[in-house]
Length: 150
Image 1 (tube, helix red, strand yellow):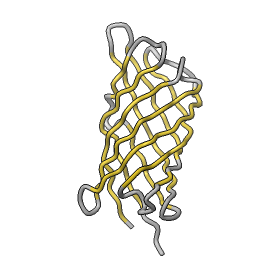
Image 2 (spheres, helix red, strand yellow; image 1 turned 120 degrees about the horizontal axis):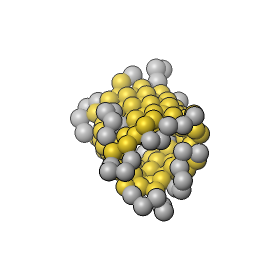
Image 3 (cartoon, helix red, strand yellow; image 1 turned 90 degrees about the vertical axis):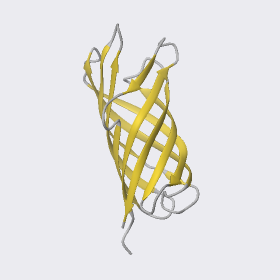
């Protein structure tokens, strides 16, 4: 049996950090690009690339990232609908005012997927991130779309 695959684009995200005194908006297109390979009806492996850019009057720059997340879909329908929990690791490289060596972060996404059309789903997630590129825990919300095929 061939395993289902998906490609996901998170189109927008809003993030903030406790104690950092500000909120940033992900402005890269795509904010996150992920490729999902389902190992069974509930679990996928998702390598992903991300671009997060901040531009305010006092800070300009952002992060380029590559990571691996492992979502668990409660409904067991290979990520087409329902609640999911997705822990993972990211490697981030700061650019601009955030210039840095490669930094290791970890986090979790908790959210909901909803069938939109035959091969398309909408994805909404709450995100938590921590690690070397964060002064404190980063929290956020993302929204995107996914295309599924076998």
